[in-house]
Each structure stands twice: as C-alpha cells, then as structure tokens.
Length: 259
Length: 308
Image 1 (cartoon, rainbow over the protein chains, first blue to last red):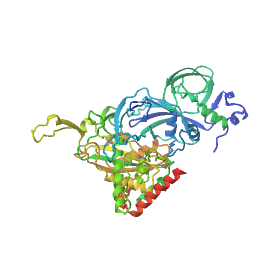
Image 2 (cartoon, rainbow over the protein chains, first blue to last red):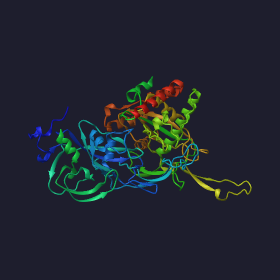
Image 3 (cartoon, one colour):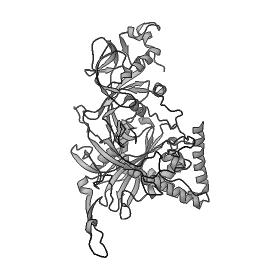
Image 4 (spheres, rainbow over the protein chains, first blue to last red):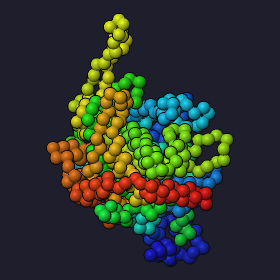
C-alpha cells in the first residue's frame, strides 16, 4: 500500500513546504531507519588513491557504493561515458549515510594476471589489462556479538529504507566483490527535526546530502564525491538516535515532500 | 530430476541486468599435496588474523586462500573443459584465452565476465561476472597447517647447490579450507558447468608442477534472493564442529543463518541427500553438441540484448 502523504496526517496542505512542519514522522512518510554495522569478511579493496600502480583503500565507504551494494543494484551494461548516479539512486529502495571505521589494519597484496599464451604478466602491449601491481586492502573484520555489550568494530552507518524492502544481511562491496555482513538494528519511531543549532552528526556526511549551513568540516577525498569525516552543520534536519544525531539526507526529504 | 528443485533460483536466460536470484555452493577444499598459497616476494604463505571460532574470540592467524587464486584456476578449468568438449562435439575450437584474448562469446566469458581489450576497434560492451568468490580461511590456525620445506638443485657438474638452496613455505596436506562459490542469476546450464568445474579443478597455488593438488567436495547448497553466509563465518562455525565435518553439520549451520537474512522466506537450504543427488546428476550430464549449442546460443542472446 502506498504510504499516506505526511501532510495529510498532520493537517497541512500539499503546497506547504516540508520545512514548515519542523518535524517529519519518517514511518508515516513510508520510511524506516536502520542502524547498520558492516563487517568486511574478506580483504576489502576499492581504489581511494592510486600512485605508481599501488592502489590504496581508505577505511571510509562512500554512501553511493553502500546504497548500490545493499540495493543489490548491479548494471551489467552501461551506455555512455559517465555514471548516472542520480537516476540509479532514485530507483533504489534505500539510501545510506557514508560509513567509517575507527580501527582498521591493512595488508598489501601483489596481484598479477598471467597471459595463457605467453605465461607472462606484461604481455599485451598497450592494451589496458591487468598485469602486475599492488593493492593496499583493508583486512577482514569480525566481531563476536556478546549479550549486553554494544558492537564496536566494523563500519557504522545509517540506512533510510523505503516501503517494505528488507536489505540483505550479506552483500558484496568493493572492486572485487568482498563479502560483507551487516548487523541491522531498527530505530523505533524515527522522527526528523529541523534544528537551528549547530550539530555534529554521528556519521560521516556526503556534502550533497546537506541542506543546512556547514560551519566546519574535515574532508576525505574519495571518488566519486568527497565526504566530510566530521562536519558541523546548522539549520538542517536530523534524527536523534541513541543520543547521537543522524542527518536526514536532502534527497530523502525531497522524496518525502513529493509523496 | 533433483536439479529441478533449484529451478526457482535459476533464470531461463542470462541477462546483462541481473536480479537477486542467488545460489551458494558450499565446498570443502582439502589440500592433498603441499600447496603454496602466496602472493608476496617474501614467499611466505598468505595469512590473516581472525577469531579462533564463532564462540572463542581469541585472535589467531589462519592461512588465507585468496578468492582470486580460486577463481583463476576455475575460470581456466572451465575454459579447458569447453575447448575439449567443443572439439569432441565437432565445433570450431574455442579461441578464447586469458587474459588478452577473451572471445566474449563462450559460456566462460558470460559467467566469469570479460572485457574487450582490442585497441582501436569498435567499442564492444563488456560482460559482468555472475560468479563470485571470497577468500577461504584454513579451518585450523596457521601454526598447525604451515610447513617449511628445504629445496635444492644440484649442479650436475660440480655437485653443489650454490644459491639454489632455499626454503619453500607451503600448506601441509589434509588442510581444509571451507569455501563458498556464489552464483547470481545463472541458468540451468551455467550451474551444471560450474559444478562440473568445481569437481574437476585440481591444482591450485604456485609451483603446481610439484604440488598444489586439492580436492573440492560440495557439501552444501543454499539458494535465495541474497547470500546467506560468508566463507569467514563458515570457517569460524565449523571450527567448533571440526570433529564432524559433514553435510549435516553444514546444513545445520546454514539453517541457523537463515534467520539473519533480509528475505528469509525466500531462502532454501538443501539437505545433504539432496545436494549429493544434485551433484551426481550434474556429473552425469554430458557436454554434447546439443548442450553446447544451447549454451552458446544463450550467450549470443545475452550479447544481442546488450546491443539493444
């Protein structure tokens, strides 16, 4: 069933802008909010930086990558030369915040791809195929759940899920499809508020998700778009979760405004 | 046919844009000869730190059998199988080979993926893989499975070894690597080809002229709309039950993990008897002319769809 438009539930007319509500009940708007803790169960590799054939991975996961992964959204073929993130994200049943891990270890792995004909890795002339290189990967991470103790390791993020979609607990992430396990926790009755005071969200932020004023930020340069590891934001929408603040992404707020 | 039980999780025809149908094949990769699993110049076996088991959090090192090392062997094994079966069936010999001469027309390319590498030619669409691997971790800690072997190469004339004397680090025979191969939106024929490949692949790791023999035993199959278990979880679970490494043990573990899934009502864990029957039936399928013609026609249809 299509969720009831939120302004009907609180008596506002459709032409009013969502900012006037000062409060959004996400459940009534057809969204649920989940806290996810992600564990990579294999070497996680994506190319955050690449210098002299050494490709390094930073322990921050872009929210676009996470959204694609958890939506199980995979395009085998793509026409054109540039990705269509906006089109893709609009059709996905969820949208996440970026994720970051405070504690990681790394391993450097040498890779090669042998040519069956020559048994060499450097054949192929000017053809751009894998040969010999190094990648710095994030080590597998596992945490034993213990009753009465909060999970502390892995990558913390928050996920806005539309409708009845149930995100998978195991998915693939990164350039070589590293298997990941996500431990989900539902947030009860999530309400978003427009806050005038400065707030530091409990998670990294994609600047494209911010509609308020950014007072300070600590950038991470990560393709396809930079992230803020820590940002101080004023005049934006937030959901209070266990004493921390989760930014309501601009695209979710606009989506709610359209329903 | 027992394989029919998997029909709800298979697609009729492979498509470039895939759905969620997923089959996980659970394997025990058992080392039969000294196997060299290394990637670095130090020539040491790859290791990784993990908890000892699902119930004991103490950190231990385990030998790591990288997913790329499994995939490389099995991709080539399938290619070899298709080449030989093709010649026997009277087809033109398969011209596809890794890494710079992928034909993008055969079931290997359709399943493992492929990139057109011809420079200056018309731009041709790539194929995304629909088979996924993960690093397998030794069931027992590294200290219990590693071995250092001294080697030498005597100069016949001088009877001296000179610098040819060295040490070779390997994983000892009888080491077990619980492993998972995941298939996404595959056809009935692709499933058959994958299982046949897993059963026939034998040599893994470096220096396979003198070692690297391994036996893959399929001990479980689970299907659904998502993956249910990772190789790391499987290893940690099995460590606690290492005295009873059987299909029943694996099925018991998979049953428990069903509860964590996003869509548990779509998951099906097959019993060890069903798995054995499926594997037997797959082994009996003949890669004859009809099978190959249909498999190649599926790939042609896939490529046609990519052209739009």
